[in-house]
Length: 387
Image 1 (cartoon, one colour):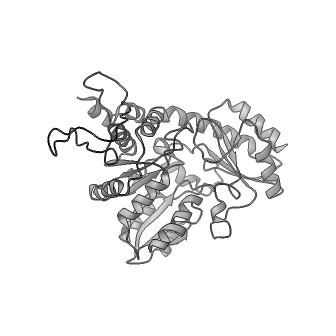
Image 2 (cartoon, helix red, strand yellow):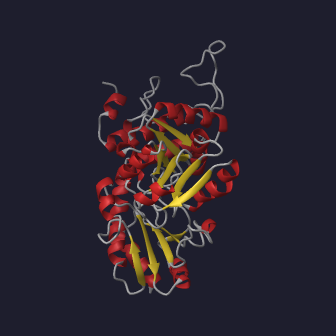
Image 3 (spheres, rainbow, N blue to C red):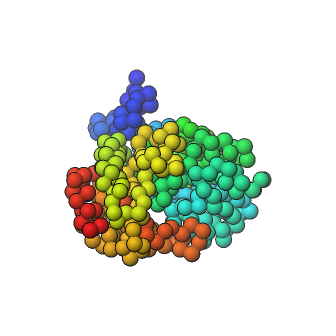
């Protein structure tokens, strides 16, 4: 049995390390080399070695990354992109046409909303928001004959609402639409939407997949080879692909995804315990809390509840801004999913683009990306910031 065949039958951590790449036959290198090349020598016209002709169309370092992300999500084929938004845009061009319609989360990531509202809408793609936690609301938002995609984040960003992937897949498929799940917050370690009926999984690999805040990237994983062919055509035609070094860094990050996510979750649970009942915290939002409205669904479809914690600060927006300003171990910054803990004010930062819309987030909301530092240090830092 080859290394690849063994990896396909193995557990998550084994697949993360071994899937998608055989040790180099010439040197035995166990890590995919960085193929810093734009073009490839052909053995006669059309005589491509391994199918490689030009690095926009394919690069061996990128191929290795695409293989492992597909294996981790248990899909048929993976595709890597220069950013999460590049992945999203390419998918929309591949499976939608002007005049089509998409249902999106009513608390979607601000960049995703901006893509739909300011870019795809101009192209002729309509959208309607619906609460991903309300299957009936999603069903009602579907436009018969026009809706081609039901787009879901679960957990959502930043309010951590939970969508029932299996139920939403049934609703989408009954309408002849695809279910697309942005799995960035959960990562492939905590949740595999394709096994629950999703057609396409989207990642900002900048986040947990890369895991070290040193690379920007995106990925798609599809369950159907016909869709894979459409995505592959548009990936090559639109060209929003990562360079080989970015692919290398993301692949390296995936190898430790399992152990990192365990620590992210451990620390997040301790932070939630500290924040719950704190006099200056009006509400803690975390799917692991039994009072969270999506707790039962999250328990059914997630391995654990993730490393993102949101909370509302008693006293309003200024107090929330003050907490962000006073934190020291938690770095004030956008993004999430790195080994370092981050704090941000979504209303002024990541979700400023949805201000004044139906997707506007509460002004007193603070979002934490809980890293893998010593948990006691994180709690002491929040204690000082809230104090």
